[in-house]
Figure 1: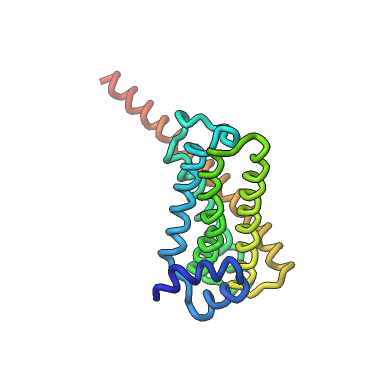
Figure 2 (figure 1 turned 45 degrees about the vertical axis):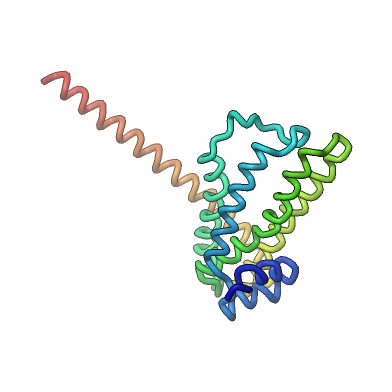
Length: 206
């Protein structure tokens, strides 16, 4: 239904408890909306570094790497979903992986709605008005964290304390995954270099 793509996300950011429950029990959420929110967030963060007013933008546009910027948003998103699913599976969470992805994606809606006008307005701001830019962008980030918290609590049917605990454990697991990934990558790189050196030695000796 069309309202699930437009009205439901707007309903969710103002009535998160009811909306996240509808997302879980009535399957109101749509993966296309969640991934669309992720893609828009990536685009907005790139645009923010390229086009935000110079008074609030300390990034040299010539140094921006779009792929790197994309990974800085997409990688934590999927890492969070995977780590949270792993932790809550062991802690009797009722949320499925799809529901975790939906709740995380829908939680990004305030960032999109607030950052777009703030990027435009920032180009016309004077120094005294930059405090409003930082205020509204901070509100967007806090709103996102609040929605994410409520979303995790609702889809897993946890208490507040257990939600806080699982979020902390999720962050720890994210760190472990990153560490193990970096370790495996380093080992593969060393293995490649070792194999390449042996190959060179064999070539030069024949």
